[in-house]
Image (cartoon, rainbow, N blue to C red; front, top):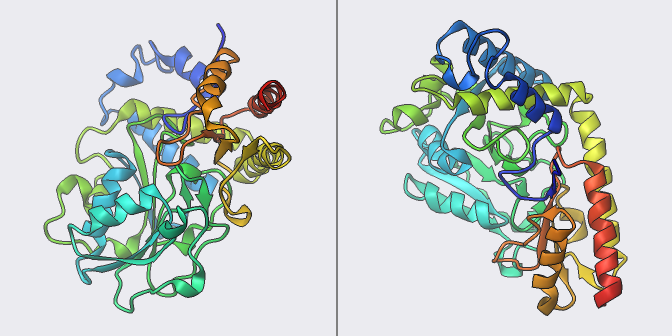
Length: 360
């Protein structure tokens, strides 16, 4: 069997050890005589899977006891609706920092439930840099401030957590979740689709400060209601059991790898290698301001757009999969999440240099 280096932005590559464990458990999970996909979500076997997954995630992120951890469905896009419905019950105003495609979608969706204000945006420079801090116009009456620490499509990232004072900070952390240590106490809510760094598509992780569980609008649907989900152990309806199980295996893999401090060092080293190869070349270019570059999603442009199709075709032949950039940015994009081995980065750089030598 030949596995490719999968640079997809999501669903993304998973750790080989996780896939092998899932393969071994497929027909018979730990002597249960059945697959995780066949278990009752309220049975003792699956309850142990769910509880261990939450405990391992709390350990990885050092989640304080004053926060609830939810395993929901609907993806991060579902949280674009859930966040305002859960937090706009007392103040129907929220501030949004717009730094790319996903934060644009988030503020548009939030506008259905209240006054979702654009407090700052870098759209005028095509999201190639962050909006200067002195340009932010934060509201005194905002229920929360929402931002996207890492924009998957543009490869734009905040180098540090914004200070929003007493106003709860909400983060769509999907593309950078579990990529490095994080101080959860700086946030009111963190949410992330699992299909980048935490598991397969089908489950969404929400970490919410407990004192915010009474801020919901009266019309919030049951499955989006954080307070009800916290009380119900994320099982108001049948959860995405297999995705939850794979996420738990991924959390355990991260712990076995040394935790977030260790994986952060690896991630930084991988990103530095790739950015250096791009910056040293006259053939490739990264459009993002250096201080705001993502270590998870690396877009790059070729000097000649006419070569894009040839680059992609030859990359596929070389076992380098899903390097096509998003249509709104063009060029290429390498998503180099936790499970991307460093050998994959080396193989990509070798290919890029060879391609440049033949076409530059």
